[in-house]
Length: 251
Image (cartoon, rainbow, N blue to C red):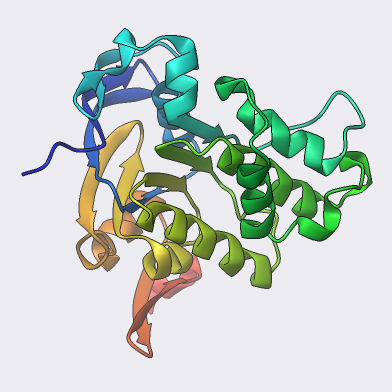
């Protein structure tokens, strides 16, 4: 079997993470799901090199700890939950910042990132003039401009309308299909089921289950982890995850 693009073994950061072992293969969009406070953001920050951790992690068979900060930044890109600019930069300047690890501007990569996120028309506007959803797409464009082999996205669709939720997830799906790997932390389980290759369910800092969408989206398992009754229906062959009122437990 081919070497995973990214792999962890017993990765931990007490008390937030404990013994997380998973693999990401080239071409995959891995959905990271779980309740608030489950450790999803912490895991992404560890993989991006922003937090120290226990255990082991490899990029294409090479220990992440052995990579220089610049090389790691070239290979792994992180889109955090929120980002701000201290200066009133233009959108195009923000996206160009994604090329810093490479020490170049690469106009083609910048143009492609703007196109992938639907922000071409915004390129000359100040980032401070944008709505929250527009800024979210611009920050993703910045990460895409760096063309990392592994892209880590923490709630990239949380502030987006329905149209751009699909636009961004389609962009991430296409990015992964280009021989790269993407891990996306996402709360909308229906969107996760629709777009992700596999799912990893995290709860209380532990990896509860990782595998095919149908294996992870188990009503009993999800109801236990999220502490609320959950029903899974299928619409045109796609899973629809429904969170029921707590009173439904008694019906």
